[in-house]
Image (cartoon, rainbow over all chains, first blue to last red; front, top):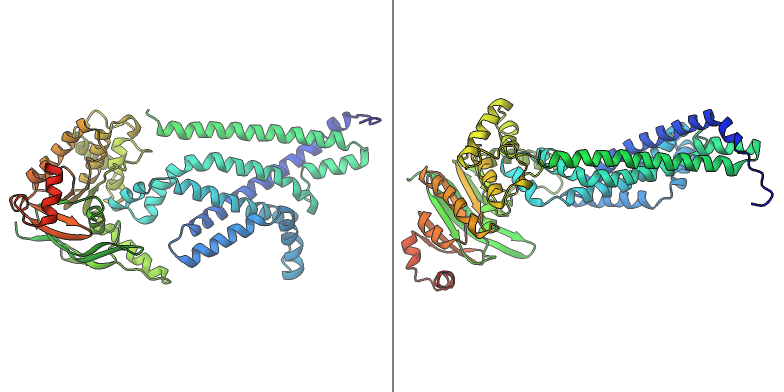
Length: 225
Length: 256
């Protein structure tokens, strides 16, 4: 980087704006993850359904949602819905929905993998004592599957967190957007984007740390007390 | 001993193209102990699982206490299926089942395993449920393991939890599906003793087992199955002296 004069002061000066961006990034990724969990659980159940057509439909939706680039999805939802159906979403809403759909496709597989990893005998034993199919699921199968689902769900969330940087293209004022905006005026893209990078690294590590504590808690509740 | 409690009528079960059970008829009288024997893959376990619709029969019916249960499935009418599925717990909660691989719930303590059916199926309050569950576990000799998680229990202890879990619901009939097959040899007799105790108390039981000596000792009636059919049945003495060639071959291969 010959001739490039570093100006880290810009980063310090724009900390309040970056912090605002960070909050937006967190908000949009959390709303996106909540949607992904709902979407994922729904389609995981669909893929495990006894009804052939529900199974095929759900598999199709999951494969479709998994193959669209987030970037394209974002454009379809934000501009496409507005142009074709006059559904005008805010950039934040469109971003959260796009993240929810992409994340949901992955969560569907995470849920399915976790649930199918539980021995069939568990469900049979639950049915045999007279529990309904849904109670057998919520009281016996799901609590065991959660231990497999949580660590993988955290991975999906970290993916969404980083994927959330794309929403700046439709004008959501996230960290990337702030960095871009400020560096355009101060000619300090290297410094600003590096600051964003560091923020993401610490964010991801914190999420991993929280996940570790959560996993330990889940495992402790199954271990001998 | 004459009141028929459970009637298996013309039951057929198919997995894919493989006919696992073919036209099975069997009546079980109240208080009777029926042992089902036969080679592996003869359909013994499947028959047991048809009784409480864990594996619903494809044809035929189960008549339990005068009520007829038939499989129902519509390809498209989800509501009709849900209604049918919603009925099954009533049948299952009256029938206790113990499995080869125990299937205790690993995320619950021994006493919670037993309480689950009491609180969620029998709708007992927690205090009452705990009391019944503890009694049930004490009866199978686990009074000192009430709050242990299954991973800290031996195979035999897990199987006792499973037996207590079924008995706590006060079932009218107990189904035992090769319950000693995955136990270490030294733990087998303890579980068999539990079953003998139940037999003495007059519990109606259908037992699938490979423990021939036990079967001949505890059963009122022995059913020999092969290739998805009931080949022959009778009292232990009748089966011991059977003239059926397949039953003879099976018994001599096991008893020597």
